[in-house]
Length: 297
Image 1 (tube, one colour):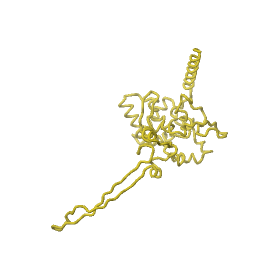
Image 2 (cartoon, one colour):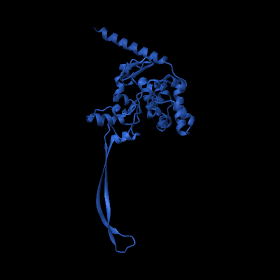
Image 3 (tube, one colour):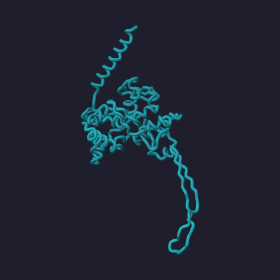
Image 4 (tube, one colour):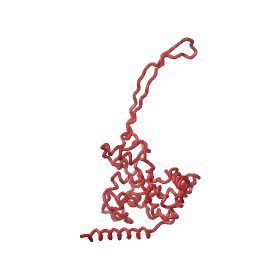
């Protein structure tokens, strides 16, 4: 009976060693074009045309160029000046593991080059750098493959190459293998990036507090809606604070007016003349109907 735990431990060690060998020998891209080709999602449009068009209009489709300022500050100020640390792939991924998950499969050299492009694009307004960075984003396979199992990687394992993960699983599609992954329809999936990010080296990166306010001020008070229920009402547009309809739905607004006569004052140009001044007190009430802080992201 005592040998069972030993055998189990040896089996786990073997699995981790094999996983390490797989990761060490996994192909890494040396150019942005090669990296994009590894996760080419343009072919998704052949069967999912409407969804693909929605995604093209979303902020996920421009997740790098829309956030150049913050990422440049992290690289040029945080890493280079405050920490006095050499830029590495591990440091770059503290931004791009969320803003462009495919960079996980970039070579060390390419990842550092991408970090340099981010700084150059923001500081020098380099249009060529922006054009190259526009190729990187949160694409179809970012969610439906690269990050699909990351919520519980130790339980679900690494994503299989060429497999599409979704909440419905097998759909009889001959173009790709599909695997059911309930995590994609749960808030915890979105919270991987829209909240506190924990890097592999143990560092905690807090770009926003969205997941914290969602958990502590909404779920803990009895809220039950998931991120997807509100932010996928328009499909893969993922509307948020940039969408007027979503803002109207998430915020209640009420204005009350109280009229009164102000204390009499002098009439300009008329000696000893006084008049009562009509006045009004305006009280505005803004109600947060969302499941998190506003504004946030």
